Length: 301
Image: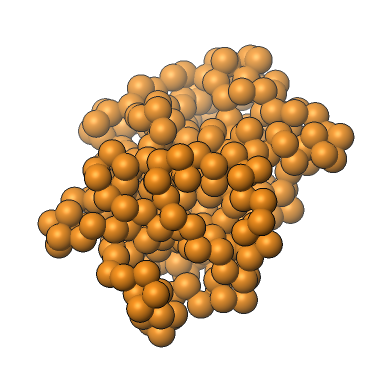
């Protein structure tokens, strides 16, 4: 499946003599959009081929992966279980837009403490979940595994070989690994992490087969799910200028970073840049609820 590509006619790009394009992966599917569609594709095939009836995965309160897995499970007649970080959510999860959407698709929740959640990759912890919940096909947090990377390798196609740079937001590292693997030798792949910390490099190296990628780590705005008035205003101004919505967790930070690098002359004149819109828009409503409580500007959707 191919997504459409929009040219982004912003004055700063024209001034610096670079061309900026946005791959609209967010439009692949109305609910299972962007990189989640790619990551789930081959995992769903494997789950069904192995005779599994249940998918189990991990995520936080606003996880795009949790929402996408719930929709995909219902579509493929598979039960879904979400192990959710934060035991305090047990009492008021109905007030959370993401979890409510996942529940409507039939997802069962197991809320665990943050301490327990950190054991999500331990064999003993997984075995305990199987004893309690029955057999399941395991999807890691964020959906990243070798089959997810295989799906993300299909984001780029032969028509994309003329781009000099390919940029994407980075969460667990599977998307940038897949893009890196399928990029041609002349391309540079740039990742914009939504989290603080250098641990991502090690995670990406588990799946990336090339060394054509690098991380631009100055645009996390404080860390995962952290936003500022500056970022919110940027997302709203971008929407007004292009009619394209961005999310505050991933794509907003990526696009802010790309445009800042353009201003700083990071890209040589004549460069062609392809940014990947990896979706995540389902989380905007929940984020706006939090912004209301803090008397901060809301994000336009």
